[in-house]
Length: 248
Length: 338
Image (cartoon, rainbow over all chains, first blue to last red; front, top):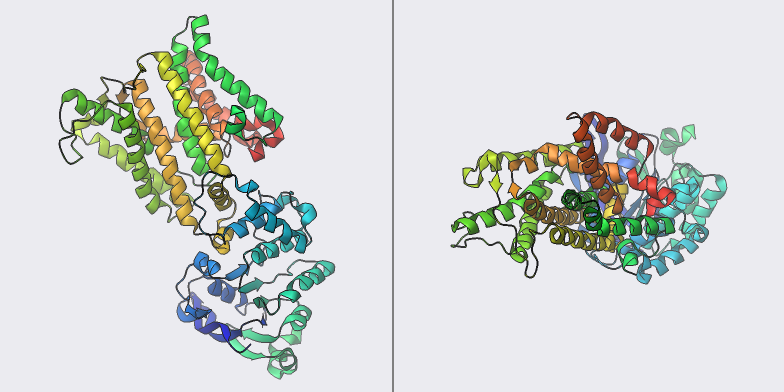
């Protein structure tokens, strides 16, 4: 448990005069669920975008799985096992649910410069895709166009896609955003068994979810780490209460 | 069986009927021409087939890849110029200027046409490598700018006719075939078009094609999944350029003339109109679009030289009411999967 999978070292990102990330430094241990919380505008989404590679950092370093990935583009980080999900659902809207998962699997099977065989009849893509849809409870909707799915189902599909890439670490940007209570519960049941296999950095607004799932929590305020600790420590920390939980 | 190969066996019945009728009509054109004693028909039909080929090549990147290339005339034009220049040197007995050695060109189709494809493909590689670093409006403007550069470049080369273009004194030669015969030429174009349709229908369903279509729908997601999207888009761009180059080689033979006008942005616009009119994101659509636009031009231009006045409103109506163009009108709901 001791070895770190992700090391963030004084990461900074400025938008004009505003520092969205201001010397961010923290470590995520392998196999843990690491919560990332903070009030609105604390820089959680910016941090996730910097870690996934979608935003280039101004200064600082990111080490993932023993490698310096600071200057790697998004797709290279993704192929090395660092996957992200989006706060706002991001799918391939014209494909079916199964297509979406198959695309995620295909991304892990080497290059896609294969021009001749029908990918929709490729069992090495379709069989595992169906299995994963079953796991997230979407097997009945395998052939539905993504646009026809309900919001909660789309979120589940998004998780299915991320899981299909067999990631070593997940950056989850508010996976429960916009979900009803039962859907949230279902999502938690999907995430919980992954604990240990997949390291997760979980950004979530719903404090109950974070406290229920996370082993360690980092609190961000104004782009800086206020404190990192166990859920109990965070709950009882006076400054956290003042900065964040006060309006909760 | 053969039909299944071209349009895919899972296509709907209506798609199959439309495609079958389309192919039968194409094969029957020379018969009609004989029947009504209108040999000119075969000529127009050949032109339609050639433009269908370019339109398909544009649709591959526009309809499937989401890349709005406004410079497709460049690849068509370069393909035509390759044939024009090789024939020019072969006719004059002079060495080809841009190549090392003393090669005097050729009129053999099996050398000319692949060379046209290779050169257009190389051009697409260069233009694509630079343009694909941008997206959206910038991509449109940059591809347009490259095509215009090539247009002015060809104008400024007096060796190859400059503004006046090059006459092609000999059509390409294929053993056992006389391309001067309108029907042989027509069937050559038809076979190449069907071959291209077949290959493209395999490509858009392959792993590569799925990645390409994924990029159009949500490029950010594709990157986050781990796809280096730039490489795939560039590959598609090069493929598209090669097909356009082949069409250019055919067009040069058809008109027996190459001019810089082919590369002008209005030409690129016309190709794009064909794709939109016929239906983006389908392979039959561009063929329909090419037929519709060229026939309309033929008929309306007979009435008035301002035939564009009719074309404009029609385009607006199609874009507003038929999401998948003419193809969508014919196929109905199943058009999305075509």
